[in-house]
Length: 174
Image 1 (cartoon, rainbow, N blue to C red):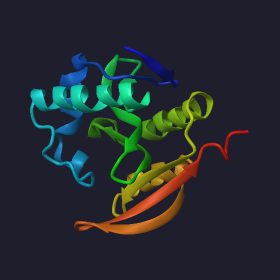
Image 2: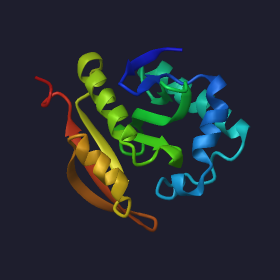
Image 3: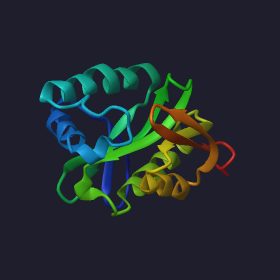
Image 4: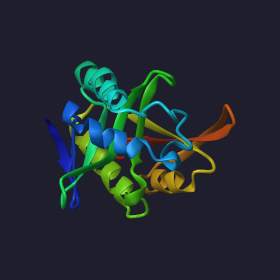
């Protein structure tokens, strides 16, 4: 397993198939997927294994990055994902996160993704990165703005109004 970076509270690393129980755990609470558009996609251990094997591991090989595991240092527990995704739906790179609700409101999503942005500025050839956030998801809007992202536009996706935020990593890396 490849460690990407660390923060005071987290290890950010690539996922392995051994993380499937944790992936299932942080995806199953209903409130986690309320605004993601993929509710019900991960309801079994096999679903979690398939996400790791067929999405994240493939993306690591194809792009050199994908969503990374957020591991709480104190307990060595995988509590969610963070980082970048080459989002073919928008033909651009997206930054995002997902955490089990037990870890919400502690600043971990911001801490993790600030570390990812810092890592990308030093080690990746990324410029503009986007975050799409449902406008009712104030917690994720706060994370995006704490990352230094600025509002770009809004669009409709199904029943949701989605705000797109952006940040230029090259413009901000001095």
